[in-house]
Image 1 (cartoon, rainbow, N blue to C red):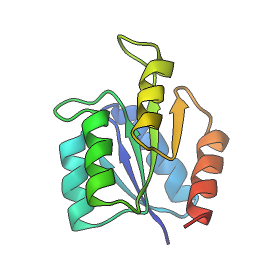
Image 2 (cartoon, rainbow, N blue to C red):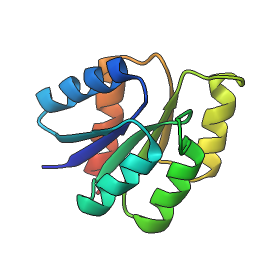
Image 3 (tube, rainbow, N blue to C red):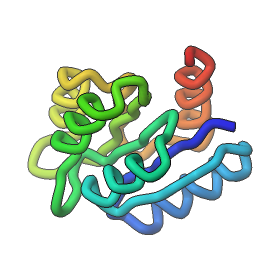
Length: 123
């Protein structure tokens, strides 16, 4: 069973993704920021991380760089609804950092599940 770590400070989105992924029979962990995510990855590595780009304490850029450095085999999906920049700007930065996929919010259940399935089948 593949393990997926969801990193987002939006509790509603975390819970929504968690329920979708549990129904799809994934092992799921959640974190509200990058620091907590890295602690969880050290304790229990994940096959895939879904991370928001705009996070408190340790943002998505720092989180992605740390995951790529410490867990190079872990797949990463960057997500964002944007902030000061439009979502496209943050997602372009995420792609430059080497994420496997970048998705603008909102996305549908089928879009995220298709993306996850595609990435995890490759591993």
